[in-house]
Length: 170
Image (cartoon, rainbow, N blue to C red):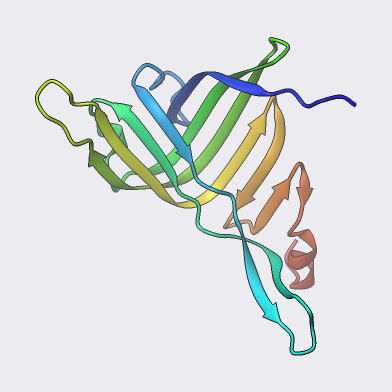
């Protein structure tokens, strides 16, 4: 049986989506990608033998975290925009794989690290109010969600199409 390749991150960047030249690859310490978690509705029927958490196609709020070495004025709270998380991954056969996640949201939090003279590390920012998210791996769409369009696609399959059609939205 063929095994799936493991991926090792070899390089990472976080930048405004409209400014590829505004790279943070040399100061970026870490990007924390929030969970893509669907809402569920608990159900416990009187005659049933199982409690069931029913899925429905609506995501819980997504949050991203960015940690940089030093200060970065473009990651201050209150800034709204589009950002690209880009990573180079290498599989166990040595092939490089591109990963891109594009998000639209608002930077809502900025926290400098605790520090004493000589050991200042950096600052942490959080992006919330994410209304658009796209994830592409090796050029292939893995995930797409847009709040204003009412669309969620997983591996190219629109899982909200039937719901939009049922209420008369194409």
